[in-house]
Length: 129
Image (cartoon, rainbow, N blue to C red; front, side, top):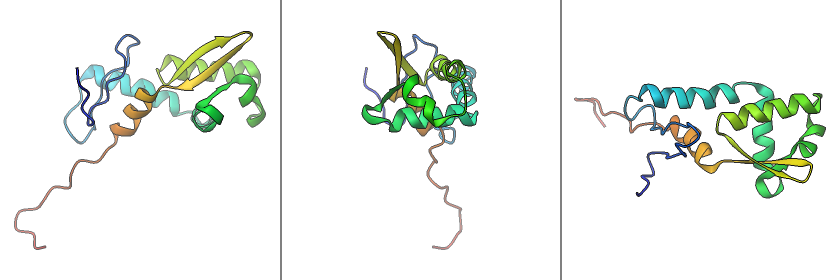
């Protein structure tokens, strides 16, 4: 199955809804639920910052130990926020020894980015150039 650049095709196995730009066509109830889950996850300032730190960290992945110095929060609180981002489908996690490493899911980043892509500007009939 080919992927259209205007449609994001996240894995359906984890419940992420496929999405299209909001201005392109009305989204379905399922698509709205998937997008809302991602948006709720990044609506918290700490989680948005965590996502940014993971994305910008060397190699595009980070463990809790890498993220702790950036916050005045406990390790369990940071882990909770990372779990919320993971459960929303934004982060993948991988356990290595005693640490869990997080990496942003490219398909989820594409979904968030394309959700608010603008539709072509409408032309007004009779408007002069």
